[in-house]
Length: 343
Image (cartoon, rainbow, N blue to C red):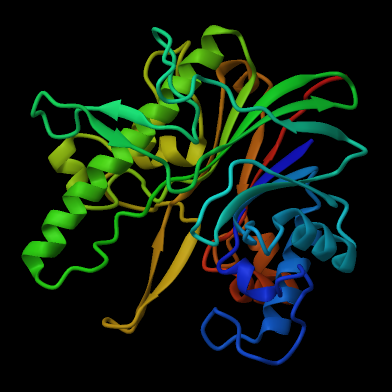
């Protein structure tokens, strides 16, 4: 079975309010790429992945006027994707939903959020992801209230062969100091955002702990907007949100080989899943932001990870159509997990 996570930059901007693809030569929300070219590129990449399920990060918007499911299923039909059904969980107001595209012939899925809502806590339970989490972020002996701007998508999965597992699709908040007027403002906002992101990671890790304690097979997948050594604020707080979600201890630790490699290095080669243009420096920056973390029982099955980076993966580079599509579709590249889940 192949599972994938893919952050598709401004996917929402390719659809009208009825969920119809805007297949024209108007510029997309991506720089210097038309809506038609970006749509074709996304379709080319998704067909090349040929995944049984794809966790779409920054999926089309879902609100009173727009439907994530309508847009994604219409797109899948137009592009001839095997993963042709869509699932969305708790929606948000950022125009960037978390959704699952999947093959209904292979998987049965349901949005299955767990945890108490705010005001109804039970000892030891992390609250539901559309709720609020109380934690002291700044050591002032007062609990701060944290909410997800993009609540994680919790999916209960049953394969055609009867295997059950849990997926959690995540997109943690960015740490960019938006709205800063001075360097001091940027510093203050960055530290506040780092605190919030770490709190979200602690909240997510609490849910991971509950699943592992229950003996669930678990995969956490998506864009954590963070990684070991990514910025200077990690040193201020001691660890990255990636390390928090991975956890500690052999029986409680999730595994992702790219995160593991990054944690063990300070210099030398690094994996990357994204490529951003820095206009002030007139160059590209690459970063490891996207992960597929698996529980210990799934790790024992010998899964294989792959980052579909057109410059780092020889098979992607050798196929010009796929290479160009990966660069045109998004500023992130897909990550896949191939795993034998048995019968």
